[in-house]
Length: 133
Image (cartoon, rainbow, N blue to C red; front, top):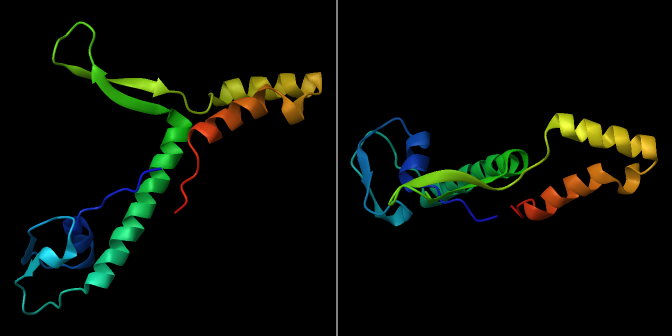
């Protein structure tokens, strides 16, 4: 899974109550302009730690969403030129109803260890592997 980029301004806003600062490059902590003399500017290391934590949290949510809902992408619409639409391009886990039906048949047929349910779940886990972070 790709690393999720969190803007410096988002991390900084979550850390301090002052609004007396700006960022020239939202992906470079060294470009923060701090104007509030009463509030101490967080260190670059502290900001980077918050960015990493927020990135990990967002990646975990996206990972769960991919596995449960599947993958959607914006693609050009077939009949409306210039327009894009959101289309499901890859399936996630089967519905709970489908999974229960697969389990029922696998148990009934004695194929639980290598049946339809195991195959369906493993296919999604292979398609959307857990992030290394």
